[in-house]
Structures are given as C-alpha cells and as structure tokens.
Length: 275
Image 1 (cartoon, rainbow, N blue to C red):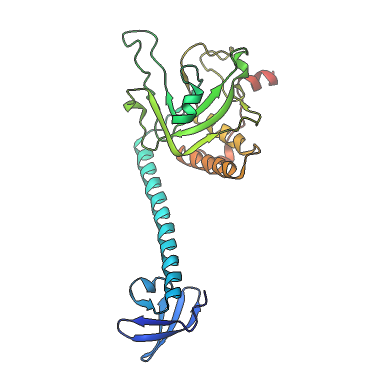
Image 2: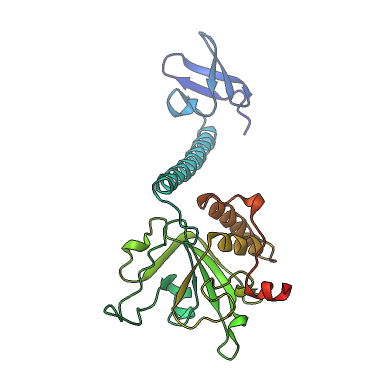
C-alpha cells in the first residue's frame, strides 16, 4: 500500500501527514516539524492511522511480524533446550534404533505414530516392556519391514522419525516410544525402498546377515545420517523433499555430525558386494 499522504495522529504532535517512507524509516510532517519513526513499529504505540483501510493494512503487517518473531523465538528456545541437554549428556555413538515391525503392526503405527519396543523374552522380568535406555532427544527410529516369504537381506526402510523432543529412554517404562511432532518421514509406497542392510552390519556377528529376535536394535548415529542423506536424493514430492532436507540438517546438528565428512554407507550387503 502507498503510505504517502496518509493522515496519522500522534499523542504529542497531533495530526500529521506521511511525506516519505524509505524502507523502515517513516517521515511525518507535523505542525511542529518533520519527525522520523521506525516503520511499521511506530504504529504499535506512537502513531495511529486515521484512514480505516490504511490502519487495517498496518495492523495486518504487525500481526505477521509478531507471528514470525514468535516462530523465531520458539525455534531459539527449542535449540537452547537441545543444547542444554546435549551439554549434560555424553551422546552415545549408537543411540538410534531400528524397528523391524514384527511385534509392531504397521497399520496401527501409521495411525497413532507410537512404536512399541517389544517384550523381554527371558529372565525374571520376562514379559515386561524393553526399556530403550540409550534413546534421548537426539535419537531417530529407522522403520523397516520385509516380506515374510523373503530372506532378511530384503529388509527395506519405509521411514525414519525422531523421538519426541522431551523423550528419555530411561524413563520409558511402558516401552512406548512417542515420536516428534514434525520430524516423521514416511516414504511413499511407489518409490523403490532403501535396503536396510546396505547401511547396517551386526557387530556381534559381522559374518552373518540375520535378525533372530528382538523388536529393535541400536545402530550408530552415522547410519541414521546416511539414510537421511540418501532419502534426500529420492524423487519426493515438494513438501516431503523439503522435510527430508530439514530433517537431515537438524539430525546432523543435534548429533554433532559434520555433514561434509559423513562417510559413505558400508553395510553388510555392500561389504559383500565389494568382496
């Protein structure tokens, strides 16, 4: 809107006419002389536009500025909490989990976005939920599946998600992992899925490619970063592509991973291919 020649009112100087607007500097001519104000902030407490359409326009601008400032402050507060927690925690190099979706039902998960860690199979606490003690707010859940008729090497990744911002695995007595409100990335069915064993090798049994028991396994922070980076290269829709890129940068920052030196994946399948 052209603000030139608009009439304003000032509590001390009375009525005035806007004579110039240069970026954020507003010049107003009063009987007492020309005065300079910061635009549009001056309309919060010093100036009032006399024309209704001009007032509505400026009020809209101020509301939008307030909205953007609130978003910026919210992000800053969030990152401050992240940094405070990271300072307190010694990040475990393998604080990510891979879910195999045997005890979890995929359809139920897609509806409620909650992951169950499974039940303890032996010992005095048999039947109790497994507590994912390594998980903190830096942790992601790699979501995998395979056709029952195929072998373990066919396991694919259908999504990845950060845990809820204030999630602590040591407090997770019920074995239910709640997910982040924003960083949940599910891959469309029509895309060719990433093979999980291209990224992962079982360090306990490096010569084998099996997953005999347990609903989840821990994996390294680098593996999650590698998966997110490869997801960015998939032909995703615009919104999903933007989320994947933001997710990747966020994950690397919170896990203190240098993006430029992230190694290439070298899971069991790729290792066998090299041999």
